[in-house]
Amino acid sequence: MLAFPLFKKRALSIPSIKAIAIADVHIGIEYDFSSTGANIPSQTEAMLKRCINICREKDAEKLIILGDVKHTIVPASSLKEDREYKDAIKRERKEVKFFLDNLSEIAEILVVKGNHDGGLKSRKNLKVYPSHGILIDNIGFIHGHAWPSEDVMRGNTLVMGHVHPIVRLKDSFGYAVPKPCWVRAHLKEKALIEKYGNANADMEIIIMPSFNPLCGGMAVNTEGIMGPMKKLVDIENANAYLLDGTNLGHIGSLKL
Image (cartoon, rainbow, N blue to C red; front, side):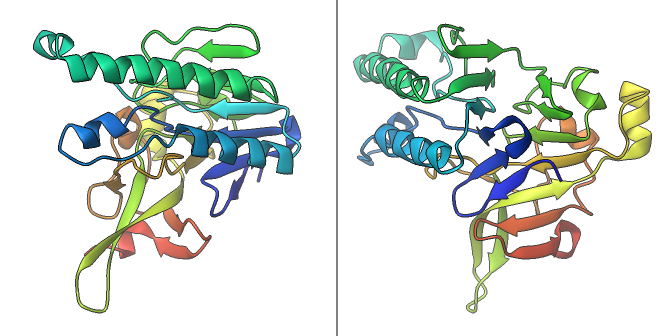
């Protein structure tokens, strides 16, 4: 195994390249809550501290962010004139810059663009890559809202975000409780060959939990996954792991 989940940290360690990977930071998501009346303080500084601590703990030279560094997508024109929205956008831009500038002082930052990352550009010690992903040391990195490149699909492992995976588990009262999780899966060989031809049919897929704990999630045991990779990933036979590392077994056996 080339990549190791850091349980309880929502991060992945790749020792061979001295790198840490995270996914779905969603800086600025607090605006979504405030627009419904919930006042939640910014999580940016707390997430920055978590990243710095993880990178230092693992002596990482690279931090790979698998998309959705920022949260806001350009809305309908009517909202663009809303004062609260404008203020939220200003705060988000300021916090994204603060987050990336501080991280770039301790590690090289590699961002694979997500569907929320319009306007994000490379600068000193920060490289921004297109959504079809990158391949480093036989490990592919994508966000997950777009098809990976053929080069990425020749790797031994593919790491992705976008899904914000959770599992819904029944508690002792019979209520369904959502739990963030990791997913380890393989590909459907026939579908893979139809799409990519000579891609690596033995590739392992790692779907990362969102780094931002405020993000909602997609219940992989009841909804599957989203994005184009849902056509290729064998989710029924994939394994789900809670954030503490507990192996819940095959997702297909976790149906409610």
